[in-house]
Length: 313
Image (cartoon, rainbow, N blue to C red; front, side, top):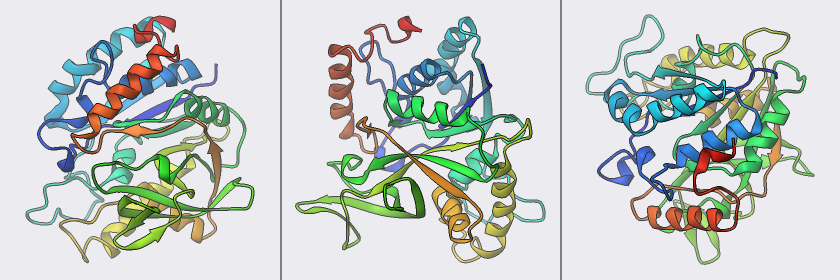
């Protein structure tokens, strides 16, 4: 089987969620967390390497809550497990961390933290989002095909199906080609909220039926080479410190949709839309957890998952 890696970005502790680490909140029948379902679906689809991006200060809690258990399960299935750390201090040479900055540098930096571990086609996901079985299948099936080195794939979700009932969320809002085959542009958009007529962000109306990125991206590796995108991401991080950090050093982040959107506008990449019919859900706010638990229970009751989640692998 062609090697394929799933990189799970689990370093963030969501301030909007309140106390605790939202990625580690139990939602399943046997206290599984959302990440368990992504790992199960990825292995089922054919991914054979899992990399967790975490922070040093949550390592102990993370391994106790899921890491040690997943390592044991993956060991029996010949699936490799690795860890990498996202650190505020891990920045391009010649730069310094701004005084009083406490937050790491965003999803782009999270992916870069694994650059020495990835030498094969790989996909990236958020730890606290449920994407559905089909999303992992279509992504894996795309990754094992031959592509140009600058090809990217994105699991496409519909905006109205990704909103929280309890507050604003951030999504990569996409402009797509006719026929929904490729992304033409993607803009990271914050504070998107449900409205009676659809959705809006800071008073600006958005098409509730537009495609959005949920940070489920796929990147090929051509002819045994390391993924081309990783070197582009690395180069972009250096530019980010030259041009963007000085403007807002406390809050600015190096984000995947922003970086990929820039590459699209420069004509340096193509981004394939991988349509999925699965409904997304996730935990952004504490109040979201009840709906997620109910959704997971329904998936088990309808036979999508076994009550003993990993028993069918």
